[in-house]
Image (cartoon, rainbow, N blue to C red; front, side, top):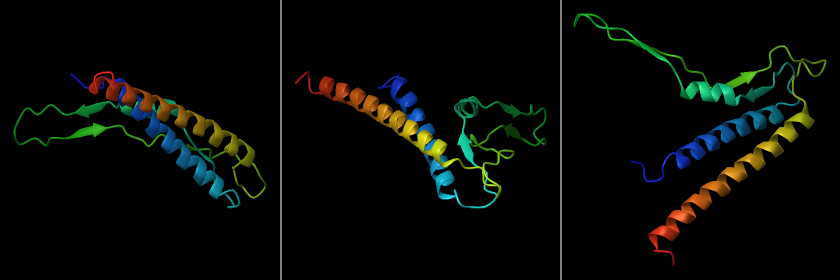
Length: 130
């Protein structure tokens, strides 16, 4: 039995997703003037699929057989290879990146507020309601 249940773990995963997305957006903004730079984005669907990774492992019928397993892992970060926003091959739209950054910041702050609420509730229970 977990002390916090699955809620804190889910919120933690949400924070990890938001942090990874923030890094991708910051990298895009930093490379706005780099020729042939392809914009990157983080897909929630890819992150979710990564947590549900399928592992293939071999059935060993003899001790002399090799033990191996295959995992399907990716970072969840994808780049837009075919998208070119400007003539120099750069794929970064600064206005769109700033909008994504604002949206991601609001999402991150909401998660932090929710975790604080959970921990404050736990603190109140520990103190006996005082």
